Length: 276
Image (cartoon, rainbow, N blue to C red; front, side, top):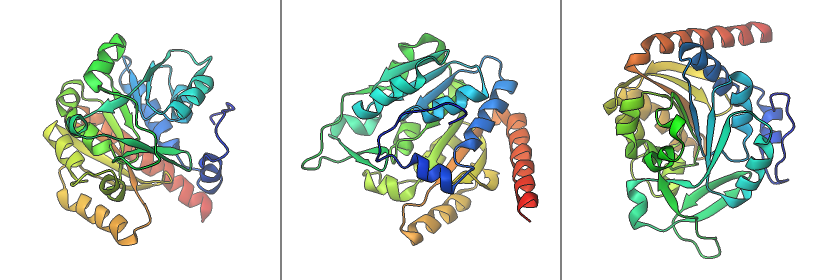
């Protein structure tokens, strides 16, 4: 991964994914590099850091400090080993709490190298305690106003975005998250579109939409509700866990959004030309 060996459980799907999808996660690396060039004070928060593979990618793309937030004890052990020796990487051992979490218990469902928080299920281990994102950032002062936030929680992304829209409105980071209506439903979220609504309310306007394998699908606006309904309808119709990666840009980052959209289109134009 980015020229660095990483350790992972045998059950982890990452080697299979990388073999089948060479563009997987490379979009995040390119966006990290663009964000670092635009914002010299870049600080990165990686929510759902898993085994540290994305932290390794982002570190290769920029020298900005990275805060890895992970609550799963299996992944935490591997995360510590994989980021060891990387400069300016901190780890917070927690799940990010949302308003919905106060009244519900959770268990951890692990499969194929990911972990999702789901309603209590017999035989699954209870999740460790939660901390709110402002509380977490308060414990890591230089990340109090991050410029890039990556969220990958297999279903809880909408709840985290909704719970922290005031923080997002203040800090205005680029938000890279998963848009996965099926996963949201599995984790008890009744409205998988509310993340987009919350981002619009927080002042976000531009969005890059990627296939979960990393290819650019669409350059659009957060404030185009029918686009999100159409995208959601596709995943629900297929019923196979398909999802999208979204990079959302605040209105104050209109120039960065235009630059990122043009750069990503140019990159994939080159890929298409090489494949022709």
